[in-house]
Length: 279
Picture 1 (cartoon, rainbow, N blue to C red):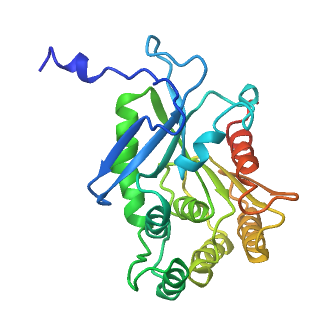
Picture 2 (cartoon, one colour; picture 1 turned 180 degrees about the vertical axis):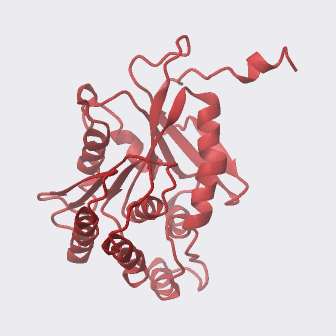
């Protein structure tokens, strides 16, 4: 065992970047499904030194990975950070079905029925309310894998868009210090009759202290998104601001002339520069 220990402590070199090819595929026992991992590393990342780096976990990594480049992110203005994109291995409707389970914090059978009708799938196909399980999958399976094989530290962030933004908001409200940076972009706070939004406002208006580590939060939407999505994001962020938590640094932005899909590059860049901007 003494001779084997150094072998197990070795870190992996970053792989050559090949378009659409994941760095890893992780099979989750908790979720019973596979996840693709796409990674981007700081320019000077090397296994030959002792430097460790913060990590930002980005949901729907398969679709957002193409934005992990200098044309969308001004790396000269941000701290060195490892980006880890997480997405489902399956494609098309199967991937969208998985998102509805993994990213939603509560059971919503009415919305699920409407989605099944829109997708043209059998009744009972859409499962919801799996956010708690997926958070455990991150904590117990995906993130420990990244920590084991790469030069990370305990400075962890998470970012998501749409349903991914809803999940990120869920993580923020249930924060135990595991994540300390949150990119909540175009969050689907209308889910389940705005249940998570109501929980957030109730928590913030109590005006009690929140015993968490110093935390940064960035909210965003596009100007031309669904009006409810924009107004709900504003409600969430303004109520958080009014709470005046000493250990929460919050910023928000509405991107002009951007829609739900077109805003993704801007919101990712805003997340990076706000949460990891150089002082």
